Image (cartoon, rainbow, N blue to C red; front, side, top):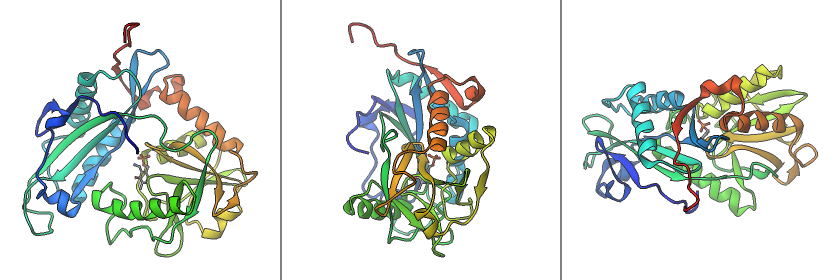
Length: 316
Ligand code: PMP
């Protein structure tokens, strides 16, 4: 995600500390074996300039605890206390603009055996300032990856498990080395799964099409949001297997995710998507999304957890 300014405080080993003090041993199980799970949550500065809108915090907290279950990690947090811990950290950091929050559950023991049981678990949370990660305006180029999406019975991709992100990293490098911005990974059956760090939607004949949650994808919270926006707009949504060749004949396509937000796709494997510019359904959903996160859409105000921002003074 490039060099982004880290905010001052982190939650670490049960309390808020300076980020610089949130350190672990090189021998930590999660460092050696990738036995961690994380969340990625955005906080947006509201149009009022005084509030940080944390997007779908309860859903992110719930998914992180599900990822922890996959890791057999028992933690002294409920969804509610986890969400409260994140809000407390945002308040302590008093951001002045958009932030990205990274909670991390990890096997904290220094132990040699690659296993999930009999190890200590910890939660850490840190935050950084973050703007756009992929282009949300002009659109991006995608390339189908030669790396297969990690299968559910290899490393479950429905959780945000740290070790599985080697799969993402291999695909992302390959896409960029081909001159594209993001990868599209296929599953073991050759069906379209998702991007390296985002879900994928296509538009065919006025309907949104996306892979099912049994299709070796992360159960994306932005994905779920897109489906709701579309249905509320009367746009049909199909969750079904997608063939690779459909990518080359679709009318529109876009990636979505917390980091990516909504990134229209203008070409796939060098072939223009539709007219090679962001299409009308993509633009409509993007507009609803950004209005929502900036606090301008009362219909979806329940997606936001509001925290007071530090209002930048004239002297700042
Ligand atoms: N798939 C992968 C592999 C991801 O890393 C992400 C980013 N969390 C997503 C999809 C999108 O998920 P969400 O909308 O919950 O951020």
